[in-house]
Image 1: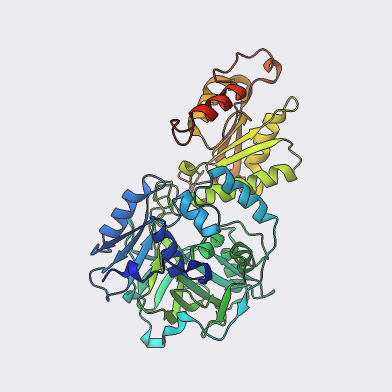
Image 2 (image 1 turned 90 degrees about the horizontal axis):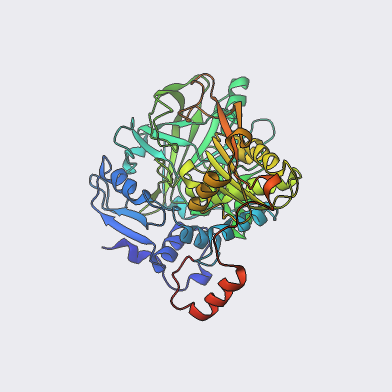
Length: 489
């Protein structure tokens, strides 16, 4: 049976926005889904996804009939490595450009939020197990990379916690390894909200309740990976993204809010000092920089899933990958907004390059207004909240350069960058142990450079003229010859 036929390709206008299978129907109708049967979870699922992720724009991949697992238990990956699929997820025109996506995110960050609503039940509750009946091993969590230390059930996931003092609900995308029928681990980098909440429970000597969702609408996963401010509920942000409240149920074990129509979720508790060996996992920087170490254990007491459940995978690896590509447009919009909030005028574009995992490389385009403007923009971009974590390069270019066009950016660096005046090295900056060039595992800071690749301020009027048609000539050619000109011109 071709299970792709189960996904509705017609009548989508009235379909629920929060259902993964509705989304699959939409991308199938758009020619954005590839179904593969019979790939094993030990080597082949991850190996195939690696091929698909080597170039942005390849189809999403749904793995069916996984050997050794019940028929109908599926794995979906390579979900958000396509601008077309991101557009579809956000309700934008399918062929909207990268910069249109950046503009969308800029407006979204300034827009409304919609709180979740609690409902009595949902499709997630079709299959419920508790206690000794819990068996995470029936889910075909892949070994995503050849040298991974185990099976990662949580990559495209939501890890949900509640702050013990304030009741603040937070969810984030943290890696979750499955170890046994009822044992998993979660790895939250220091400083991330999940880590702060977990540390507070440890300070109080209490168990931390946690719910992990590993199959849901990609919009909910997108929000899990964004920099939602401390104290704000990601469900509110997801509601604003979807344009309607997220329907949640109260988890039967923890009481935590869980998407009612998710595919798979499990609940349990993390006890103070309950640590077990975790990793390694090939991470978003493209290296095994996180290593093998002890991480908090989740003792799982409840498992829920839909019939024929779909595990959502966002395999990290050499970027661009599922863990970073969609964040390029979001982080670009966030840095742009924060530059303007800091008083930097005439920002014309920002691109957080996908090859840098959306963090390591930022390009900022400005219309120069005064001497020092370009250096100001670069220094602030390197240290504003959206741009500071794990950054390596910030390049500032003039407004005739599309910051998302790497050929043009490199051209500007080669012809407008003056190394004696245009290079700044910053030391002791905020990074992560996943950064292979951080100072050390115990001191995860790094150094970075800011490159001014704008026309020299004092030579703007005398700099050699750019070899391109004038805007007037371009318009005449477009009008007369548009039918023969290449796409993406």
